[in-house]
Amino acid sequence: MIVPNVRNLPITEAEGILQKKQISYRLLGKGSYVFDQMPKAGARINRNSKVILYFDPKEQYQYKTRGSQLVLPNFQGLSIRKVNELLIDMGLKLEAKGTGIAAGQEPPPGTVLAHGASVKVFFTPKTDDLP
Image (cartoon, rainbow, N blue to C red; front, side):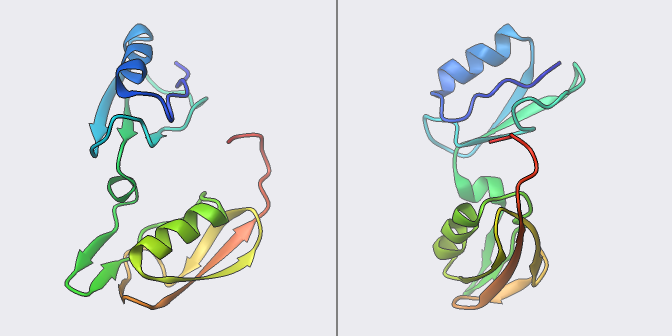
């Protein structure tokens, strides 16, 4: 099965598309529009796989707070713009190295940081036509 693109669609429309293709799904977060999905559109999945639909960016990227500290998410595969948006939202600073999509980061995902800390993210040029 090929996963359809349901990003930025109203939830009822996204659910209708997935149900028509007989693809199971799970909703994460709150909202009325699909913020993102996993696996991405175009991916091949087994009939018993589930597509996860995300509504709240914090739910998708799973960043958490521990008092005044944050647990750093994995930015791999995200654009510079998206990484910067997430870091700003978390109260952190981006040190971007390169262009394209995130391929690595320092400190690594799961590291606990205080607000205002800097995160170095390494970007490489996109090599495919995926959105």
